[in-house]
Length: 188
Image 1 (spheres, rainbow, N blue to C red):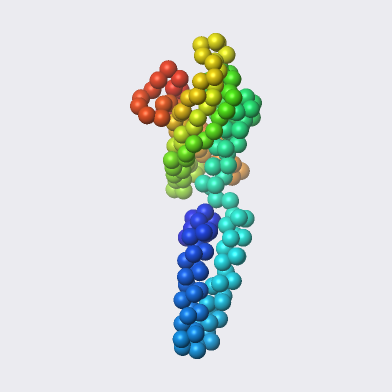
Image 2 (cartoon, helix red, strand yellow):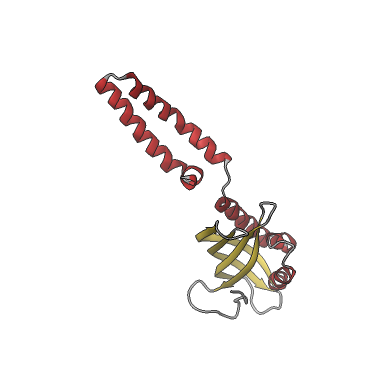
């Protein structure tokens, strides 16, 4: 129900609209005032559901925001901002990401599709696995290639810290289809 309310307001509104219409129709057929009032109450709840949905940021939505913020930082070639999503508790991972990003100059970095965000609420601390595809227009700083469009599949492991911030604790990137290639990172 939480996901339905916070992340699917259109579906919830349609369900409440049908319920409201049914209750109002029932009131018109039977004349029972309670049924009509219930229909109007459900009808009034529709904009309230939209307000709650906009105000409530779920873990999945926050992770999605972090992904798009990081893509913007990569596109801007702002390595320090791009690795902020990793957090300070994983210095080796920050160093690995900085080393990989420093090899390229990015002209574009866009998220094509977020295949899944699986939040494990039973883990302590809470964890999430994300798989997505992205496309980058990139030039090698070593002169190996210039202005190449490369689609990539990324797998990210997130962990929720005590201050309710999500950070990446492991990542890997490779080709969209198939095994590792020359550009793949060493990850899980």
